[in-house]
Amino acid sequence: MFIDKSSFLDVTRDYMVQEGIHFKIIKNEPYKYTAKCEDKNCSWRMHASILYDGSTYQVKTIKGSHSCNTLLDNPAATYRWIVSKLFENVRANPNMSVKGIKNALMEKYNLHKTHNTICKAKRVILDEIMGKHEEGFSLLASFTEMIKVVNPGSICYIKWKDAENEGSRPIFQRIFVCFKACKEGFMAGCRKFIRVDGTHLKGFYKGVLLTTMGIDAQNHCVPLAYVIVDVENKDNWSYFFNCLRGIIRN
Ligand SMILES: [Zn+2]
Image 1: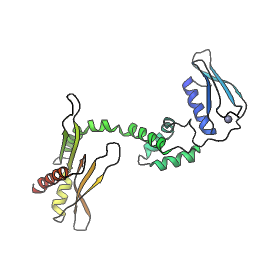
Image 2 (image 1 turned 90 degrees about the horizontal axis):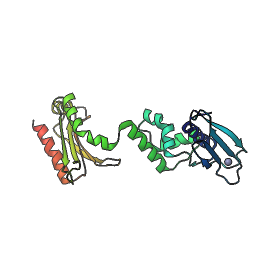
Image 3 (image 1 turned 180 degrees about the vertical axis):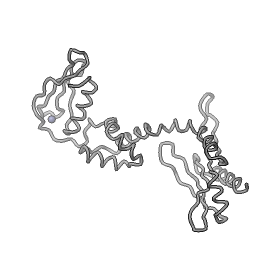
Image 4 (image 1 turned 60 degrees about the vertical axis):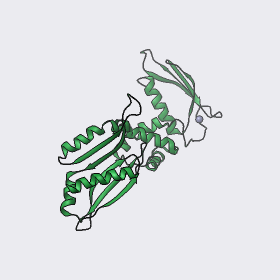
């Protein structure tokens, strides 16, 4: 017996995945539910219905037994099902790769899901844990202010492009960050040259990270500043060097 229809459906989905089978729903009404195995040659059939309390669901009959082949890419294991089962694993290890999730599904559930399904599930979990990118961008202005409050003496500039239409939001263009400790470490203990490099960012919004490093007396890299820009071009590199010049000059 199940406390309601929703928990009944959750358990039947788990059952389908566990057994490597898939139901074809014959009747799905608020008060009764009938399903049979999707395999035409399999005689398995189940009927469930609601009890007099108007909530509790009970399986009334199960006829036949499965003679069908085990499904590896079981359609019952949707991306939402993967989210519900692996949420805590990804929360504990947000850097878990798609391949890692794929292996976990194979080990725990004998499931072989497509790359796209796993990517979608991982994106939903990360959005839930870390917030959506859109929300992150909307917090950038507060983030720059907090950097200055929590790390006094640090420098943080943010630039937005003008909104394309009246009433729409401005569009992120670039953010420059130099922590006070990095600047002081560079000025006090590094050789008088810097190294710069850029790398493309992955993810939905992409962008480019431009960084600069100093080298200390023991040949260790000392981060000095970074900027995140929309594209790598002359204008953004010039902006980065102008900001750096301002820091080193002061
Ligand atoms: Zn079957």
